[in-house]
Image (cartoon, rainbow, N blue to C red; front, side):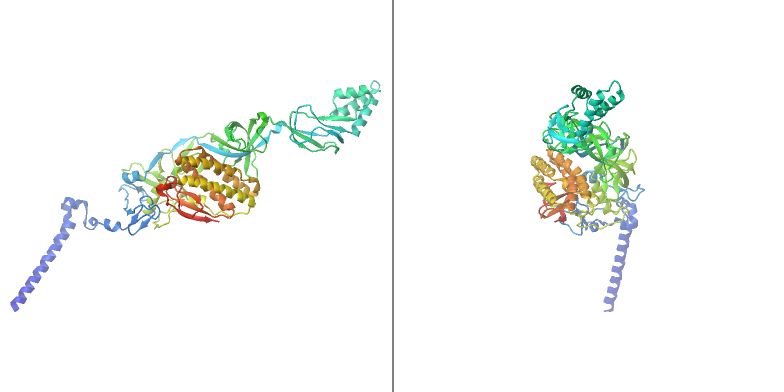
Length: 603
């Protein structure tokens, strides 16, 4: 028995020794001993341990990297399959920890495109609203040179056309009769008392009595009882201040006659528009009342003073008006394509390269001399808009390369890695969930707090009628029918033209004018295009201005849903309005009909 127990103890010790030796050899082979093997040179003990399986427990969407989940599934935004999230490490040579390195495959998948920042002369297309006005140089105010009574009236209504020298009225004036008698009496003594005679003649001349009429009075020896008022110019009587039998005093206004063969097109230019407008610039404009015709002219005058209340300056175009088809007070919409007034070269960047937070403008600059595409967050200061570009006031230098497409995806990747990004300028790591609207560049800038104002109910009804035509255009976008979109855009433009601006007063009036500067051109471009992609880009711009309108003025007993897709508008995100809460995406149609979410309900 003792021998058996002794053998068991011996064998147990042997097993322990063998087990310890095996563990030691294994540790030496995979840790220290790994230095002598090819496999070991690539990995080291703990660092060689595969953490990929652990890291793969975080799942994200290739199109919406802000989505992070702990298990596989479908993207809650677009419905695509989630993929494992892999960390992208910077090159070892990076000196800035905020540099974001992408693999060539990732950059191609994200459709990253870049451009070189250059010095160019900025150009812009300015949309101006205005009215037709009378040419002030062709206005004649006819007043009474002497007091009396209107005995005859040859102008029976306002708007009557007259020619130069036509009779307008006949006046009986007791003072004029007395002055004529003085002339007749003085004529008898013109040889002996010429001063008296000349004074009597000059008195009549000052009352606009011609020398021929004076000679006739002197010849007849009897005063004329009635004198005619004649038109000094050919034109249209636009104002009549007297009626038959009225008594008028010297200096009283009788008629206003305007020559409408030439009219002024007076455009309203805001302070931000003035750097882009200069004398001699060509202006193309349309008059909604004459939809079949297009007009053009040159800037003849820019008002040197800005109105203190409206903050606008008048920009004048002189226009010939044969047949008087153009009527004063008609509304006009014009476009000025111009270089900046200073004609200086400045740094320009495409609008697609800029991300807005409302306070900051952000671009991603490509880091040179990197094996893989590498980008660095840059905050810049922007100058005025220049068409599809922004003028850069500071923050960039000529020759730098910036991302112009896929910028939002670069920013999303930076956020996921805790680097500097649009929403995290300090580079703090964030945890994102199903909140795919907050990183859109338009959400802070365009959707600031807008207070609703009380306006004339008639205006709200007209705005609602425009909104109803907008919904038909929205349905055409959902169907991806470019021809139908064009037709409905034109219908919407007509409905917008029926909204009476005169119903608004003060700040509301100015706000609506500002919104029209975006609404009208966007609808015009959509209506003139048959390319669904171009139409959708303008549609995204249109909806930002329409949000301000509906938020400020409301709808007439109606509810609308303000909805958003982060993938629209080149992955910069875009909004639209719907009469239903159900998501039906107008930017992708059947491709991703349910992609999006309702951001706000406006009642």
